[in-house]
Image 1 (cartoon, rainbow, N blue to C red):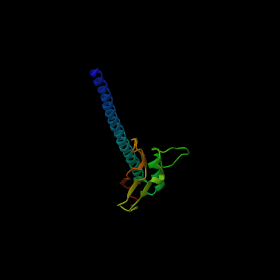
Image 2: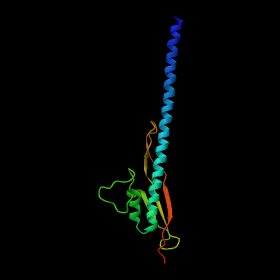
Image 3: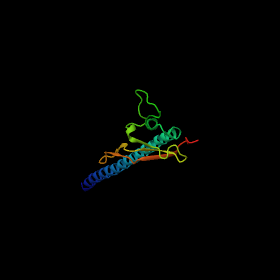
Image 4: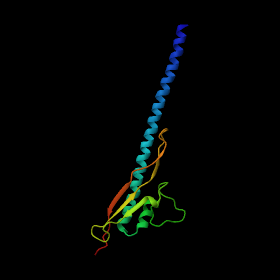
Length: 143
């Protein structure tokens, strides 16, 4: 009789241990997914800024075209065209042209305010990622 009671308690203990290990494992997997998503979105924003800066190096005075390159991958926007990254708008893209029309001309593209969402329960909230800034030397317009 005492042996049956002991086995019943052990089964309950192993069930509790399994639940704790599974909970810890799932939290780690979801945390890795969150980390991977943030890295992916950050790298995607860097690539969008680089694409816009490359276009801006050749067309440094076309600020609207540079913003459109960052968002739509095209200097002109066709009707119904969607952004390369969901939630990215031209308002999030800042273009600066310091020293334009001089040998030191460069184009600086900054993307800021892009919203990101965590998967992790308890942390599932939106936040804005770090700003991404890319600078590229502009083609000289001075003879």
